[in-house]
Length: 113
Length: 112
Figure 1 (cartoon, one colour):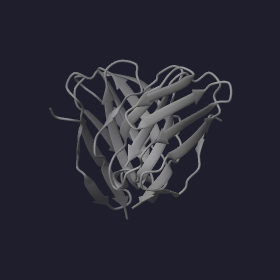
Figure 2 (figure 1 turned 45 degrees about the horizontal axis):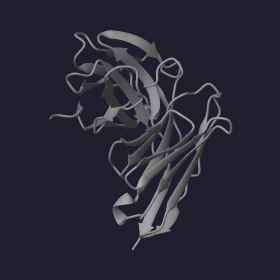
Figure 3 (figure 1 turned 120 degrees about the vertical axis):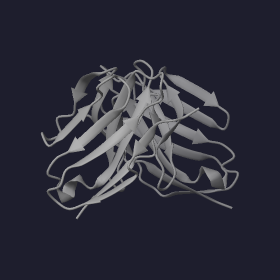
Figure 4 (figure 1 turned 60 degrees about the vertical axis):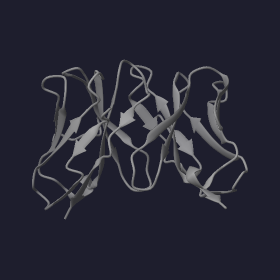
């Protein structure tokens, strides 16, 4: 039984570079969520998909962030022109249906120098 | 502004004692409430959910919900050193329960 898989686990980049994270959810789950967590804070909602449709994107998310789930399976989160304030843990979670019982991946930690 | 508030701690609990964690939320229309446990350097893990007023027990954990007071709590009985973690209270959005608003978490330290 495989859980939610995220890669890369760690990414160090220079300011202004683009980065992409991948999330492979639990196979039978139709909903996929992206959250961001900084030190000492709880996760913050970014966006979510039902199958391949992106249903909501947080107003806190700038246009530099884009997410896709092209075939309703894996998802990617791209950050363009990274800034130091983007440094955080990016968490992916999946579930089946409309529930808050989420299964989180181990996260992708981004450090922007 | 929708908010979920928790005491940050740390909450120090002797081994075998009861740990009591509290959470308040601001959106009176909220219907789903969750407790996640997060070990240092790890991702959150769901331990309890509650949707109706009252108590819900699962093993050593009891979640309590009072919608009139907009208050959720978590009790951990017979606390073990392995319970040392940060406990995150989360409230589901009324339009999508998976769109969670998290509190900042309460750090629990169980001392042998």
